[in-house]
Structure formats: C-alpha cells, structure tokens
Image 1: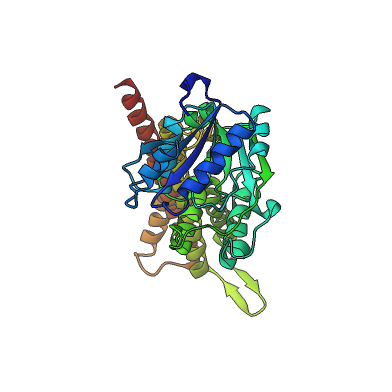
Image 2: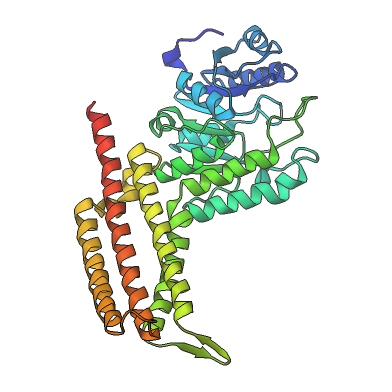
Amino acid sequence: MTQNKQQIEFTILMPCLNEAETLAVCINKARAFLDKHKISGEILIADNGSKDGSQQIAKDNGARVVDCPERGYGSALIEGCNAAYGKYVIMGDADDSYDFTNLMPFVERLRAGDELVMGNRFKGGIEKGAMPPLHRYLGNPVLSTLGRILFPSKIGDFHCGLRGYNTEAMRNIHLQATGMEYASEMIVQSTLHKLKISEVPTALRPDGRSRPPHLRTWHDGWRHLKFLLMHCPNWLFFVPGLLFFVVGLGLSVVLAFSPIKIGNLYFDVNTLAFTILLMIVGSSIISTGIIAKVFAVQSGYIPQKAGTIIGEITAERGTFFGMVLVFIGITGAVFAFVVWSRASFGALTTNSLRFTLSSFAFIALGIQAISTSFLADIIRIKRRCRNNG
C-alpha cells in the first residue's frame, strides 16, 4: 500500500538478519493490525545483511526495506529509526515471538503522550519454551533490577524486544550502541533525558525459526552489564572510590597520632602504610570517575545536567586545592627531614614514620587533584574546539 509519508502516523519497525522463515508472517500480522484499526502506517524492515532472501520477501509482502551495512542489533534499529516516516515507531523482532496483531496498548500510550512505551513479558505472559530458564530467572531479572537501582526507572523488563516510541524524541537522544545493549541504552538515555516512559503487558511465545537465535547469553549479558555501569559513573567509580577513601582516611587519621590495640591485635605504622594506600586508591578511583563523567557529558553520553557538580571542577580550583595539599605535605616532609638529620640519618622512629607517611599522602593527593582538574579542562577544551570547528 502506497502512502504519502507525511500522512503516516505509525511505523512498525522490524530488525532483520536472515528471517526468511518468519518475516512474511510478521509483516502480514502487522499489516492486518494497521488495517483493522484503520491506522495510517508503514511496515519498515531494517535489514542487517540477510543472505536468505529476506529483503525480497519483505518487498513482496508490501514492506519498505532499508539496508543497514553495519552489523548489529542496535545498528539496524538506529538506521530504522532514522528512516522511519511515522510520528511513532513500534519496534519488534521479526521472529514471530511477539504478537503484531495486538499493539493497541502501545498505540494508546503513545497517542496519550508517552515518549517510550516498553513491553513487559513478565506481566504479559511467557509461554513454555519462549525464553531459556537462564534468561527468565537470572539474566533478565538481575539486569533489570540493576538497571532500576542505577537509574531512576520503574521498568520491569529492560530487554523486551517489543516497544514503541515517539520518533522525534528518540532521534533527539542520539542512541549509539550497535549491539544488543541498544535495548538497555534506549531505557537509560530515555530516563536520563527525562522522557515520559510507561510499560504495558506483552506476551511472548516461542519464535518460529528453526535456527538458533542471534542472542549470545554470556557475551551479550556482559555487554548489557558493562553498558549499565559505564553510563552510571556514580556507582562504577564514586561509590566504591568514596568508600575506600573514607575508610582509609578515617583509619589513617587515627593511626597518624597513635597505634590502635584491639584485644591481641596491634595496629601501628605498618597498618598506617596500608590505610594510606587505601585512601590514595580511593581518591584515584574518584579521579577516574570525575574524568569519566566529564567525558560522558562532553560526548553527549549523559545529559549536561547530570554532570552539574562535576562542572564546578576546573583547573583553577583544582590547582588551588591541590597546591594547598602539596604545601602541607612538603612542609611536613621538610620537618620530618630535619628531625631525621638530627638523628644523623639513622633509623626513623615510629613517630617520625607516622609523620613522614602522612606528609607523602598529602603530596600524592595534591598532585592528583591538580592533574585531574587539568585533564577535565583539557577534555572540555577539545569539545569546544570541535564545536567551533
């Protein structure tokens, strides 16, 4: 059916890689849905390099085909989103595991103003054999729970392949993931950009293919996990870094003045060396988190408003703070050297070692503060130069 693209309200988008067995069935179900509800729409197949004639099958069944030369689930769906004529897109796998004749919940929520509508297979029903037990009881629940913890999202099924969105809103958040982690990126970026998100029950049944699915359990699961952590510097860097730093700092302050005795255990200078190390490791992780967040904001991975506090870290402020720490450290080190010289540079006393180690810690933290703030500003300069160029 030929339509003026300005008149198309919905695009039903299906990524495709060698789906000759089920593609025609999915297209015909989607077309039947549009016709039954008198919805102005198109069927768009984002082909990812099929070698089984899927492209011709799609055309023979009235679908439009867009070729996606870069391999990957995300690549196909990004290309499909960019090529869609519809004001709204409903995307679903072309393996006949989702019911394309029952899309009205998505249509209604999108028309009501929601910008991302997720399907939830755990609420809609999963037929026997439709999802491997490892995915159903471990992979999906764990990753979805982690996603809800890391981001302020109420989505119960992060990896449902049937979902709808406002085309313009989705284009504006510039999704980039090329693989299966695209499913997580859509939710993460929609959440970070404050899009209006809802969820509807969706049924899942066994797909109609005779070949194995493209999904690789451990490989793609790791990519989803890595993506979630990389888009949440607070949990990946700041939380563990702050924990290490606070514990190390607290113990170091106590041990810098006197040893600690707990029962038969005696903690003194040797322990102080390790607590200072813990503190410096913690500050290093925090510094890495600062750089990661600056880079993420400047690259558009996370919105500018998500890095507001980080934006206050500049070379000027970092240098001032770092120089204060370095000055304190050098002053302490000089004092320790004078005390050592009076002992004819012999063995250091326990008290001298406490003072010396503490001084070195101040110097290390100061240099780290200076270098981190300068690197953050360098990243910002490169971004400004790229924008001006």
